[in-house]
Length: 263
Image 1 (cartoon, rainbow, N blue to C red):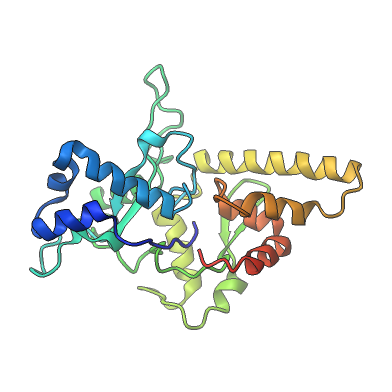
Image 2: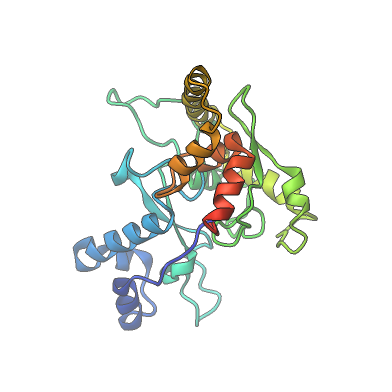
């Protein structure tokens, strides 16, 4: 999971909101034959470099399955002056979170243990294990630090909290917890980012990385880490950005610093 940044609110959302300030999300989704929603979704995807806001799968794999998730419950009507359903800063583009099925109609991985992202968060809410308004209990991608707060366990594909990096963020927002380490740890749990399905996908990234490193060593290419950093991070973000960033370590951090990376 990485920090994201928002561009200006899409014009179609602005115009709709001005005309229909109290409209529901369904009203917006079906307005103009769905064109306005699709444009808003595309802008959110582009803002995130094509990645799911949580697990970092790339939308090019299954672009039609990406949708908009509202970080704060869009049903919240407690403030008459606030319409969370149409709040641009409350919207993230997310993948299906493991809800997809194969061509034979079967799940690729058993669920709910392999749900992730908002799908698993919704599962926790449904089961009464998480309150619906769970702001503060996990990172909001829009507000989390741009620092690399996670490490990658090469033995099993799991993300683990980078405690040293968390400890350096003294001015960070800890949400409902005492420190950033707890917030990062609970984010992994609430979004189920270490389910076997995602771990297996990250291990494929590791496999490809190992092949590239092996070939570079055979060619006595000592600049391979710097070259990979440029290849992976110079344009659109690659899927599993955090995994790749952790694999390249200092080379990734130096390159991201050079390009003034802010999320």
